[in-house]
Length: 233
Image 1 (cartoon, rainbow, N blue to C red):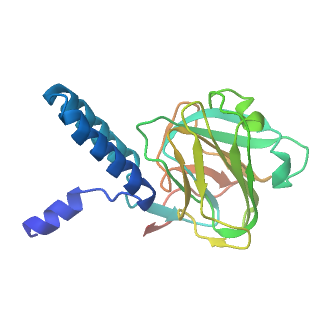
Image 2: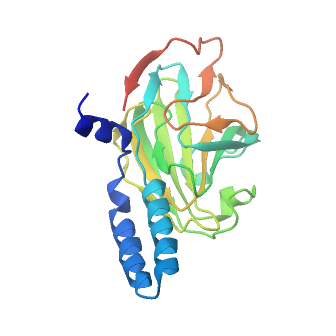
């Protein structure tokens, strides 16, 4: 392998949504440098953090119609029955909900947990409460997707938090999504809720670390979670 290829393989791509923020951090760093070397290094560290925040690495997705993969990097912060947001049209009965909480150091590109067709893509303005609160599901700003998948209707909700002030979702109603495919991101830290259809059981535990597009979040009852077809996305 050449030196150039080695460098390319070591570098993690940055999502285009982050270009202007990284540029802004870099300009501020140069200005801080006029005040002294100490301030320059503080700005440089912040710029590197910003670039890492918007990193968009490839993932090896365990593609299977029997599986639900994690939509986000982070940890499982909630696991249990919860009534889905009304805009999803999933009914008034509680469904199994798995919440993945992202901190400011996680990769924030979100990935589709299943393949299918997007039936609902709805942005709901709201508050910016701490994302680890249960009421954040109903009161915070959010963007909800309802995906018609081979497993049934799966709800995916991006929820803003105390620090996160911008939800980005480039997936519209009628779009087809592939399992593990990128559908949006949240700036800067927050959570993603997944509402499972009946007959699909969680495959994770509270506090477990998730890798978006790779970790099997849930599976159809009785399905094998090992040896699915892998695909790099």
